[in-house]
Image 1 (tube, rainbow, N blue to C red):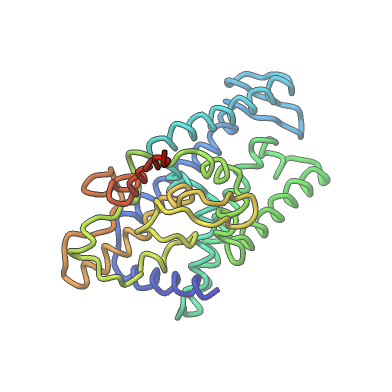
Image 2 (image 1 turned 45 degrees about the vertical axis):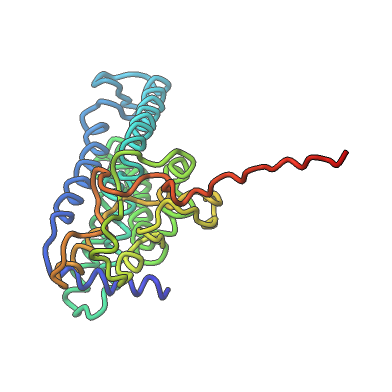
Length: 306
């Protein structure tokens, strides 16, 4: 809990200055929700457990074919996940995952020093986003018109699922948050086993020139990593996580550490920023430096006495 409090303090300090990452994350999450809603609402693919109006490729079809389309759709998403992982690691986790955004809304509610009105607004945002996310998931399995045109029983079921899902999303944001990403998320588990990104992500350079070792990057990391040492292996994190994978495999590429570093370095009037997010460049490599790799021991042969 102490680490969470440190993160909230750093986030609160950074909120005083608008940042480009806020707008980019809003765009990424918006695109994810738009896709989740657009696919079933347009009839590209939908399974309707209410009246059986199943769709695939904008045409009515049978349940089996619509279900096969759903399986193909999610298989395609995993292909995209695989390709994006090669380039940018778990960047979707930090910039496009609605579950991660729910965690951020939950953190907003725990920001130190919130006034009553600010807390109500934060609570409405958290609940509203959770409702919209659950609605987008429900839309894949039932025609949303059931919410106002269904029979009393059908409407009760539909609204019950929405209400339960919204409460669960709100509770997740308040109390579970990033533990889900660290230990349970199936996509995160897949990323942990995969090789980390080789072109884009968090990297550390110019440490001798500008890093003041303030540890803001460590304190703000939502999944408790050391952003300056992402190539070092980390211990198993519980749940389904694996032991001894490099920190880079667990990194959500959310950019919070790079933003904190940029903010601290700016306050101190230094440059360049040592912790960055972007295309890898500079002296940092994605593997251990040649100096860090111990030279193999030379074997000496002992000549037996004749």
